[in-house]
Structures are given as structure tokens and as C-alpha cells.
Amino acid sequence: MTPAPQPNVIAMAGFGIFIALSLIITWLAARRTNTTEDFLAAGRSVTGWQNGLALAGDYMSAASFLGIAGLVALSGFDGLIYSIGFLVGWPVVMFLIAEPLRNLGRYTFTDVVAFRLQQTPVRVASAFGGLAVVAFYLIAQMVGAGNLIRLLFGLQYEVAIVIVGLVMLAYVLFGGMLATTWVQIVKAVLLLGGAGLLALLVLARFSFNPLALFQEATRQYGDAVLAPGQLVSNPLDAISLGIALMFGTAGLPHILMRFYTVPDAQTARSSVAIATAVIGVFYLFTFILGFGAMVLVGHDAIRAVDAGGNMAAPLLAEVVGGQAFLGFISAVAFATILAVVAGLTLAGAAALSHDIWVSVVRKGSASEREQFLVARGSTVLLALASIALGIVFKGQNVAYMVGLAFAIAASANFPALVLSVFWKPCTTHGAQASMIIGTISTLTLIYLSPTIQIDILKHSAAWFPLKNPGLVTIPLSFAVGIIVSLVAPEPDAARRFADVEQRIHFGE
Amino acid sequence: MDSPADRLRALDAARWRIALALTGAMTAIYVAFVLLIAYNKPLLAMQLVPGLSLGITLGVVVILAAWALIVVYVRWANSTYDRALADLRREMEARR
Image (tube, rainbow over all chains, first blue to last red; front, side):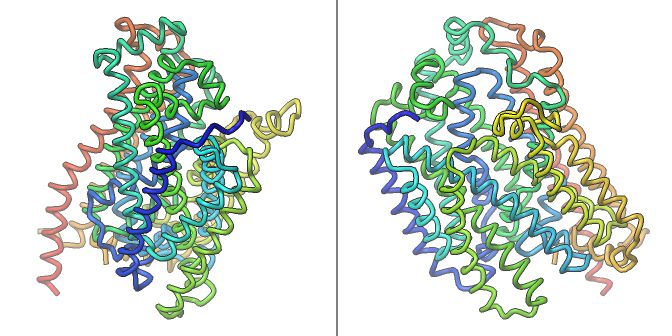
């Protein structure tokens, strides 16, 4: 680790302004947050544009902005592989998930899986998968947050984690989904605007011709930067990572939860279209930023600050726009982390309060007031847990943790969701087995993968050859769900499928 | 004329076909891109014009394809699907 740099006054001010803004939003939102429906689903009053931006905000994490820009800056073309993988999941969400989800559920994706099945076993299994995804994603964001804030502001890692945890807690607890949505929207606009401005300033130096920028990159670092390199050497590994990224998006609880904040399926549809457009543009920007940093900052200077390249975008901002712009971009990066952590916490709170407490513990008989209290209590619990996880997992590789979260989402949540909604013979035990086997097989194969066995535990060989288990675990999870359903049919569940067929189109 | 239940089933089948076809198209495009990266690096390294490799061009094409498929779906859903659904809803309420 390099020594922490001097705190940047403008970054500190930007950071302060963003915190103040979030708290004002919270204060405004808190007055309109009186019921569970307000707290977990913003009263279903969010418009298509708002939800589109909020979805993009939830999805464009600091890992995308700083991580992918850094990856491109250090290895060129290879960074693009990640951006594209993260984008192609969105059409899948659009075609298979968004509208059925909105029409069939109330607060969580578990509502949809459990719709025509036996509530208790499905909800327990599904909450298990959902919380596993939230936990790994949270760890990734918190660890990233600690490192970044240390680098950006010169704060100590632990102090940074506690600040992120507490600010996030304040606004999720009091402002619920409405505040979280608006913070997400503000952050999405800031991030897109900041990245766009930065890209524009870079291109201005190359007479607004991206090809001139790429050519300059090849002049400095050779033609290899425009070609696939070392990142993808094993074809099966590449496909495995690719499909985990693609189908994982459709299984991320905090993304799926957003579809309950809009009034109907048509709005859910338009919000995905807007989100996909925004995210696509953003990834195109990060590509310009990455090559810009490669050419204008240089490999050595980027590595000197952070070996992983995470500081490429902020360093580039300093080169093209000076200290003030560096401060602005740093504040945007901070806003990004805070907003994503909040979205995850709310998704976790929904799983704990709605799926576990109300549906399983109280068998659906909890009063509105009790549900609201449990949802807020879960938020406090998750915020404290995220601070603890962030501190315990200090030093973990962020991109790897995110990959893990996507692999579990794709193998545990996505197959059960698709089978229960589209496949009539699907049974309670089938869905349950698919989710449990999906989660456990993913965790096991990740433990046996080269990343853990060779890179972390320093063993000479790994039991399982692939770094990402998606290629095995996604088909496995589908197969288990189908076989278990066929072996022991559940006539009640099949009969209730008629309801699914109605509701999936007409909603409630 | 078919009963509303039959027409709902037909609409459901149409939506399902389109959803699967478009998901299949996206998966095929992306997997083809990844396979090219894995198996034919020299081809992707080829520069179409100085500064623009085939790899970067195809990467942008994949992003454009994702947008295009979404546009195809939204157009179908906003016109054909929503209209058929509205008709059905009206009819089912009238029969009630």
C-alpha cells in the first residue's frame, strides 16, 4: 500500500455537499414514508425515467467506474470484455424478468418464486440465496469504499467504512426506498455527467476523434492494447464468466426490487430501456477514460498510486481538469459507493422483514406496524453487519467478490425465478432444491477454484479448473429444479399456475 | 371467435416466443464475441483503420445490438402486446 495522499479540499467539500444533499432528500422522503409499502417500494410512485436512472445508479458501482477504467488503462481492450458482460444482462432482464416480476410480486423476487408454491420452504431457500448475493456484493462495495476513501481523502480505512455505514444507515432508515431512489438518481446523473465531462475533456486533446486517442495509445504501448490479451486465455473460463455476468444481473435482489417501485408493468418496461441506454453510454465513456488515462497519465503513474489501477479515472481528472476536477470526480466516486451500499441494504432488509419475518415466522399474520418496525430493525442490523464485514474482509479483491455475487445470483436466483414463472410443472421442492443447490455448488466450486486454491491459499493445483463456476452451476441448478419437479409432481402448484398465467399479463 | 381465455393463451405463447427468441439472440451474439476473443485473438487484433481494431469495433457492435434488441422488444410490447391486452381486459370485464 502506498501512503495516503494529502486530503483534497474540494473533494472533501464535494463529499460534504453530497452527504448534506442525501440528508435533505432523506428529510423530504421521511415525511412521505409512513407504511411498509412506502419504506420498501417508495409507495409504487416512481416514474419510468426516475426508475431507469435509479436502476442505472444501482448498477453503475464504483467497481465499474474506477475498476473498469483502471482495467482499460492498464490492459487496454481486455477491460471492454467486462463492460460488455455487465451490459448484456440488461436485455435478459427486459425480455424475461421485469414485467412478470412487477405483475406477480409485491416487495421481493421471492414473492414471485413463492407465488403458486408453498410459502415457507420457498421463502427460506430464496432468502438464503438472496442474502448470500447481498452479503458478497456488500463486502465488495464496503472494501472498495474503504480503500477508495483512504486514497481519495486520506482517511483511515476503518474510519471510512464507519462513515459510509452510518451515513447510509441514516438515509435508508428514515427515508426508505424513496430516499434511496432519489439518492440513486442524483448519483446516476452526477456519475454520467462526471464521466461524460471527463471523456469530453480527454477527447478535446485529440480533436474529438477517439481513433486518434487509440492510435496514440498504440504509439506509446504497442498495438497489443487494442487486442485481446491475457485476461481471457482459457476459452471455457471466458464463457463461464460471460454467462455468469449475463444471467447474474437478472438475479440481483437489489436490482429486481426496483421493479416494485413503479406503478405497473409498462413503466417497468420503459425503465429497463432507459437504464440500458444510460448504462451502455456510461460503459462507452469508461472506455474513453481508460485509454485516456493510459495515454495522458501513463501506466507507471497509475500503478504508483494503486497497483490495481483503481485510481486511473481520478488521476486522469487531475491531469485534464486540475485539483478542482479531481475533487469533483472523487466526490462522485464516493456518492456512487454510498448509493450502491444503500440499495443493497434495503434489498437485504426486504428479504429479512418481508420474506423471513412476516411470511415465515409470523405466517403472514403480522400487522402493518409490526412489518414496518421489523423492516427498519433489519436495516440497522444490516448496516452494522456491513460495517463489520467491511472491516473483517479488508484487503479482499473487490472485482472477485463482485464476480462471486453475480455467480450466486445467476445460479441460485435466476433459474428458480424462470422455472417458477414460465414452467408449469415446477414444484415447491424443485424450486427449493434449485436455489439451495445453486448457492451451495457455487460457493463450493469457488472455494475449489484456482483463485482461492492457488492465488489465495497458495496450493500448487486446484480441484476445479474454472475461475468462475457459472458454466457448471447455472445448468446444474436448472437441471436439479427440473428433475426434482418431475420426480415428485405437485398437483396444487400446477393448478395454481392458471393464476400465474392471468397475473403475469394483467397484474393485480 | 375464440374465447378470451384462448386468446390470452395465444398472447402468452407469443410473448414467450418473442422473449425467448430475443434472449437467444443476445446470448448468441455475446457468446460469439467471447468465443472470438478466446479462439481468434489475431483476427480481433487486426486494425481496420489505424487506431481501430476489429475487436473494439465488434465490442461496440455488441452494445449496439443490445440496444437494438431492446428497441425491437419495446416496440412490439408497446403496440401489439399492450393493445391485445387492453382489448382482452375490456372484453373480460364486459363478460363479468
